[in-house]
Length: 201
Image 1 (tube, rainbow, N blue to C red):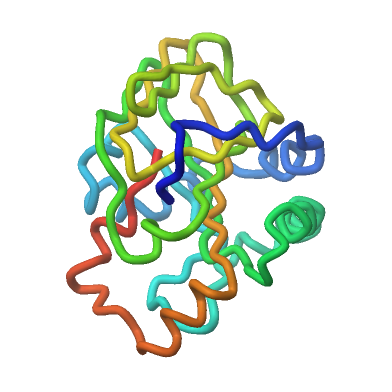
Image 2: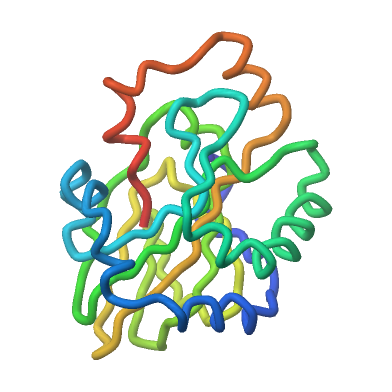
């Protein structure tokens, strides 16, 4: 979503339950779906696990098998977002992204219908001072447990200079007005929008 800035600090989140869930994942979970890297070359240094995905831009989002492992840990976060935005919305996408050690997500702008009008929220679950997130001309270090909204309509990139992977939980939050707009107009043609809709740092 485009707003008058690059980042919005949404405050601290207790991520202990999410980190516990994260510790149950193995390498096979991270490598099970490589479509994101194949569709969007900017993510060649990343691995992703979809938990919630509104691939068809319809009234309901798909919950992937691993969502159930994270559901109870995600509930307080989603409750906080409901209170923060107070817009009758819901998460239309929720995924885990792992950027490999010494990896890069090159400068890009997210595209696709839903990404242009939903809040893109990043919550670092595993990170370090050696990870830099840049939006526009502003670069910051996102600390573990800090939730940030990024202006994904501006050029953005990530550099991980650490010896360990960086892992973020990404949530795309759509207001009820946005959801009505999409459902009333029918499904978006994902043949033309899916590659862009997979974007995100």
